[in-house]
Image (tube, rainbow, N blue to C red; front, side):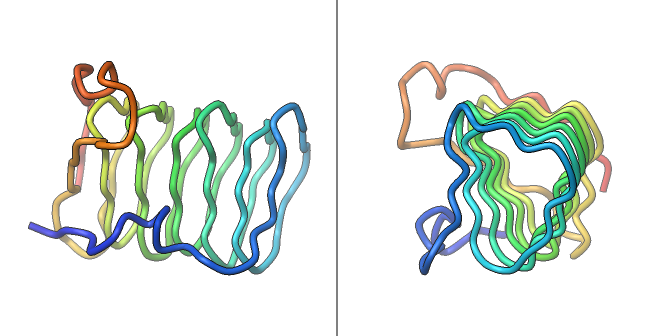
Length: 144
């Protein structure tokens, strides 16, 4: 079974570009570096670096980045060049793709999961949240 040595949220360091809650971006986003989205995005992105959609964040469109952490709501595909981590607060309506995918208990995925490395998706229990998160079962429809 594939396990991440450290959670990706813990491992991401260096300068970050933050999009604050209450901010709405419409259009195509391209860039390099580490991005954290707390607001709403309508459009596609192609980021060379890690991308986090924080809890409460909303994205409508395709997310493509090197490493991706989703804790908010996505209506569209999530494509990680390396790793994809889906937190227990996440809701994704669309497919997930990456070399390694981890899905926390409580996350809802309505779409295909494609692990490019050929290994199965990993599930984990979120240990940094409310007790209610751990009580909600994970709903995954996986196709490798």
